[in-house]
Image 1 (spheres, rainbow, N blue to C red):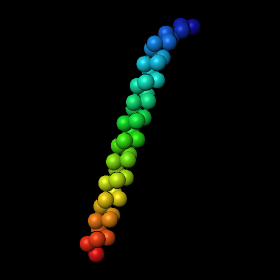
Image 2: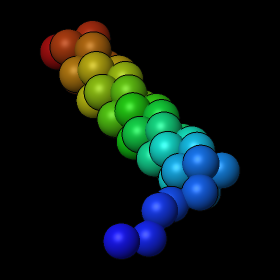
Image 3: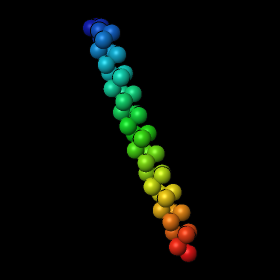
Image 4: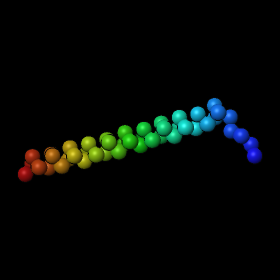
Length: 45
């Protein structure tokens, strides 16, 4: 069984963390946009 070099493992984990952070940022942006739209609709009524 081949062993994975530690540097490759660290690079993989770093990439996964960056992907997770990007997903969280996108989700937060969507939530803020939806909240902004809702508050805008309430003001119009």
